Length: 541
Image (tube, rainbow, N blue to C red; front, side):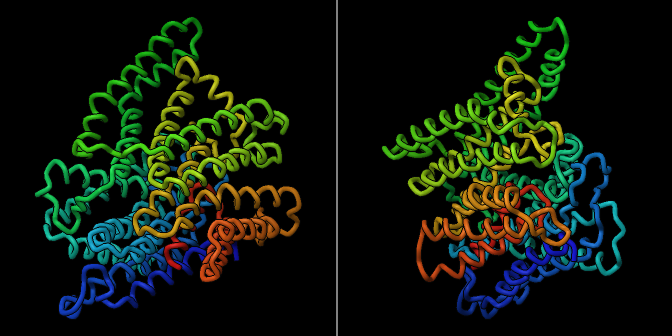
């Protein structure tokens, strides 16, 4: 068995369990369905998503036989060199996460709304196979069409207005068709196929959520009652506004940014470089003031987004101190670990990167425990800020673009072979996604801390132990058994120290072992995929 087969087994087995749980649920146990309604409810209404997920699992098995996954409009040069395709992760991970979240929800309105997002993730799964430049057998195509039909039927059944149902399906497919090639062609060599698929899934689902939340304020009568979800917390609004607003700035101002980079690399154009950089900052500020700010006010309905409390001032001071000491330590002492600018594994580069994993634990764990809502908002602010910093770095925007580029080159490895440095964004996104998703089923803080612990503690321990004492390699893998044992043990002990209950030992042991095996067998970027997998496991068990 190859490492990709092992990866498939690790992901598909709990995904199959989640589908079985969905099939075995009685209709009256579904939020908002009881009594006579449950008896009269068509069978398809509560088994259609589990059946579709089983179909995705089968489609992923067929796709596993192909060593590469190349989509129409792209060729091999657009993908990260020497990376596995990540077929299993790309096809199966997002629907699995969405299914487990849906099974965990107990609120009727939230369950109906989230069922729509689940159906969209299932609808997109066969689309990924249809747009791939690969021969598909007749059986594979039939199963893919069956998954598409199930997901489309789920949306059709859920949404009262058939016009809105068709608009949701066509809009999601069109958005996916635009986002996926844009990621691969605009940011060449930055992603494997699996990573691009997962990021496109996240982008489409967030975009659908943002559009629905905007329509709920602009034209509430247009939205069917089942998907309106009128009651939204301000922190969800800020997540949409900050992330999509910052991406909007990059798209609109891309010609100006290219001019800035051209001026920075041309001799004798220093003044033009400064003027263009100032124009970029002015234009970005204008977009914030005249587009993003009014959109935020619309979504918030004029209400105060949150009330400051003393603990929030304490957390802001704590984070400021941690950032200052962390960056100062990076500048002063990380040079002791040597220098390695070539992509690829090295002990020095590994220690420098894990330094920031440790910083993530020190900053985010206290913040999440003390004020989960502020942590939710802080992640949105931080990710939007890192996107802006990446604009400044990638296009050498005056006055600090070149300095930021030089600093980040110390941490570049095989994951960052394209025009953008993604590892720091992936680290922050990996810590943020469990925090954001944990608000949906409102589970214990273990699930919310999953990304921080598996990346900040587990992944760091696996990497350090694997480099130092790892001798026994997994079959067809460069990762060691010793590193995986260190991952599982450290994650399990950390969670036990935070919330020790005998009832939760079996759950934590299962999550720790399965996540450790996934880390061992997956060749996708750990910072992106491991936190999502851990969230799914926590919500499943």
